[in-house]
Length: 170
Image 1 (tube, one colour):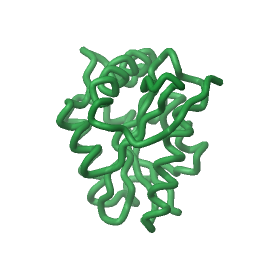
Image 2: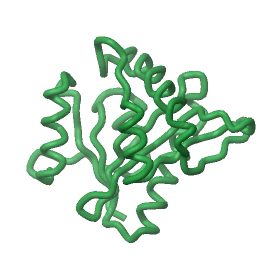
Image 3: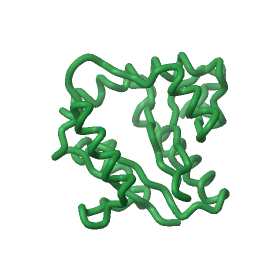
């Protein structure tokens, strides 16, 4: 694999991260996880994630961003908000390295664990996170925060039967 470095994203990288998210949308479309026009977080959303949360990017030796993963800290949990790798760079372990960097940061900060919401069926979503130790939460185990996130995703048009919340306790 090409030399890839994982490090915090800076403001000058945010437009490239948005482009990566838009390109990754098509990979999700291929699994049936999303439909419609490609969407991505705004530059303001990325900036907020960078300033208020944790935002790591994967860089080539030439300092070109090829993937990213971002999380917020809420209720003493690391909540993974988004993780994407450009389609040209997928299936090389970059996503795993990005998520592991977030998890290590959460553990270093003394958090309880990590949570996320994702597509249940796409192989690089719930099955991928399960391979990292995340467990799918059943309805009765969902915190109010995760219930609200799943409800919001449904209101944005994501199929509720495909969505799942997962968590990993450190």
